[in-house]
Image (cartoon, rainbow, N blue to C red):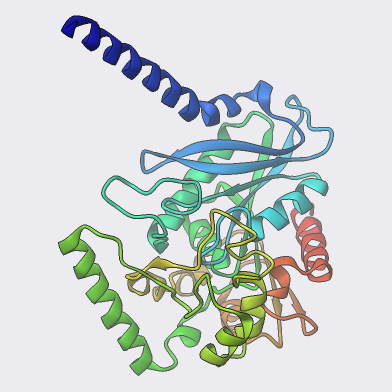
Length: 344
C-alpha cells in the first residue's frame, strides 16, 4: 500500500509539473515566428535572467519575410504595458511599425527577482530592461531598424538608454520627464522627507523580508475623484485621477494587472534624473513633443536646451501632460509626428 501511495503521489507530481511547464511554455511558444500575426502578440524576452512579458504589435498584412522599422516603448511611472503603450502600440502598428510594449522587471505580468517584490520599478533596471528589449528586437529577422518612444518617465528611460545604446537609431519623447531635477528638487525640505521615508522603508524591508507598499502620489486604488483632488491639491490632480484613479480611463478597474500602490523605497531611485546630465552625449536624432501649458513642461524645455544633436520640437499649448496618454486628438497628433520623424 505504501509503495502504491508513493507511486500515485509521484505521478501526481509529474502531472502537476507537466501542467505547470505547459503554462510557463505558453510565452515561449508564442515567441516562434510561425505564431506571429498582425495585431497583438504576447511574447517574452530575457532580462536579469527573468522572462519579461511583452506585447508585440505587428502591422496589418504582416509578413515575416519582409523588413519593418521597430519601436521599443517606454511607459510612464508606474504603468504597465496595457496603459499608454497599449494606446501607442496599435497606433504605431497601424502606421506600419513593429512596436514592443513590455512590463519591466517586477511590474505587471513580469516577475520580480527571487527574494524581491512586485511593484518595484527601479530606474537603473528600467534602462537595462530597455537594452534587453532592444536586443530582443534585434533577434527578429523582420526588424530592419530600431527606434525608441518614451512617454513621461519613459522619456527619461529612452533618453538615458540611448546615450550608450546606438542600436537605437532615433528617439521620440512625449510629455517627457527628462530634465526632472528642477521639477523634483524644487522644495528640498519635502524631498529630504521623501528620502527619509524611503530609507526607512528600505531598512524595514531588509529586516523583515516583507514588502512595504505606499501610494507614491497619494492616490490609492479606492479613492473617488473628489477625495483625491481635495487631498492632492496639485495642478495635475484632476487629469491624473481621470487616467489612474479607481474610476479612471486606465485605472485599476480598467487594467487588472495595474495598481497605484508601489514599493515604498521608490524615491531612492526615482529622484535620480540621469539623462538631463548626459543630454549633450546623445547622438541619435531626437523628437520632443510636449505641452507648453503643462505643469511638467520644464522637464522638456531644460532638456532641449542641453541637446547638441539633431533634434526637432513639437510644442503644443492646447493639451495637458496626461492628454498625450490617451485623448484621441492628442495621441493622433503625437503618433503622426513620430511616424513622420521615424520615416525620414
